Image 1 (tube, rainbow, N blue to C red):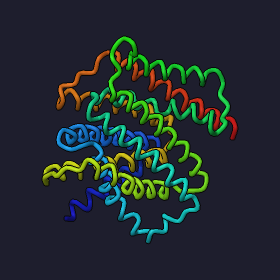
Image 2: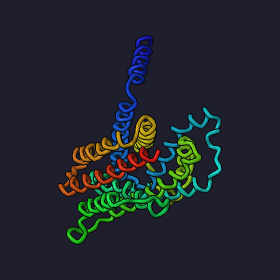
Image 3: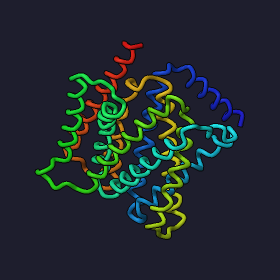
Image 4: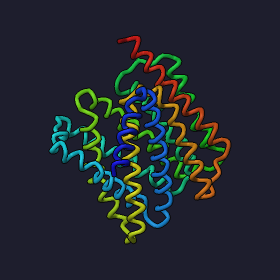
Length: 304
């Protein structure tokens, strides 16, 4: 026991001695692994259960892992004056999650991940339309490049459009709307409060879709869904802490690792080999999103 305590203390000291940018990058890499594991598990479990039912348990177990934080604060983190915005964002979030989980059950993992990188592109467009942010020509060029990358992956008119790919694209657009709401809420709400309400409302709003397609399952399947909830919670916590440690532009390039991990999981467990168009399109989309984030940071620095 003494040796274990010493190892934990040594690891904690080593972690604290690292520069914030190193901690942020490490946490971002951890989040990509956790997200990829969750996506692979969703794909695996969807062979026996409907994705809506999986989403319900992902949210329930995610809330269970969040509960100690609520209890520790004696539910003080739930104090808010924006309950309507929390509800609206959660409704949009659950729609995006259900679509994404459906897509995972029918579309190759790498392709699903590649198309999910369009969320920052949609968010940039919405920032212009909703928040009134001013864009210059280079920003519009990056946005158009991002959509070009999506067209490279989908190749409409050349190959048939599959339902899963359309669901991912729609899910990314909805997630961008949710992120805009989070951006508005963050002016007055803490990150912990936003995450807590997301955990509560997603669990509530996923009940009806799950009941609609409910099927009995065994303890082994339940165990897999516990892992889905755990990996999803770890991913969310890791990426949130990563953004607190350092600037997003320092960690965002490592988010591309999700495509590497999901491609490996898809090839190893589901015999899915991503084609060259998926890799090219994903790279174009990702670089476009990264360019937008980089320009936003530079503008923020120059205006401060």
